Image 1: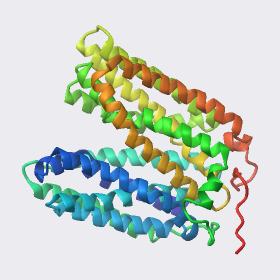
Image 2: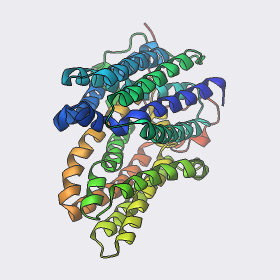
Image 3: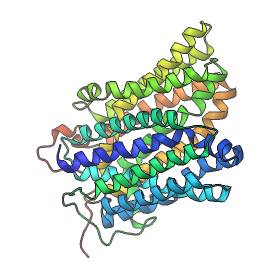
Image 4: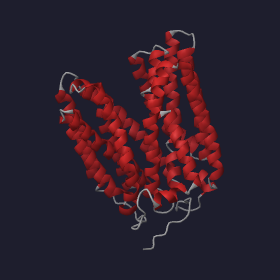
Length: 420
């Protein structure tokens, strides 16, 4: 691991650590501490998603034309301003404007950091690099949330101001660290077509990337989009899970990722990417079946709780398998110099899934227990089917990157002209 990659990983950990301070407490802060009500708090969460959907189509073009580092620095400053202003905002309008800045900055960080990892890695090291990124992100979120929980006081707005100030400081510290990164030379396309026209037309012409985006939507919709909405509502309403047990389940998910990430990496890095994703679909189908037992079975409350915690742990195992698989595949499908555009497109798909998932899963999980479990079990099996179909579209090197004979990444799609 070179010096640039080490700094990028430190940056990932810092940003996740800062987010962990505030994300679990955002709803309580807006609705109760600032006294703005549940409606405003719900709008704040929606603003995060809307801001991401607005900026991501343009972020890809900016990364292609200017490189990931300048875009990342702009995103970090924007997010820091949003976090700092959110900590002192007292009105609904100020809270919503601050949330839009924070949400936009956070959304652009993801593809910018991913593109920096692509530029600083090779086909042989990329899976390990993304696995490390995912590991540090989860570790940072967990540690940040744990420390933030001890600092926060729902009777004191000042304690929340401190949390948001720490988050802003983490973003600014990350910006300082990133300015020391010496990025290797990567192609920049000065005449990149405008977002929404030529660049997106070219991306949509890459059939493998389109299939991966569809697969990615189902992945995020059926897993991440259910963690804090449908699945938690199902656990409380159908399985009688207590709030403390729900917290234990979320901790089990993070613990599984932290403990299993590199053991899983040894297993997946020499196997076909499409088959690894297909296996994740089967593991998640088992997870939904176990969740079905927790809420629809007739065992004791202790058995239901154990089954529910096991569901989250199984999801964590699948996540650990995906982290060194999906993100590197997005990069390897991108034509030369277009990794930023492809990363931004995939991040956009993720945001759409995370916006739709809770809206669909929440009501289903709270009231229609059996249909909810059956529907998402089918979605998980659909992941397996889509992954197998994607494998037929990939080249051997894209599906099995260790076959690459050189340090140059084999990329999919038509080559991109850099002539002016």
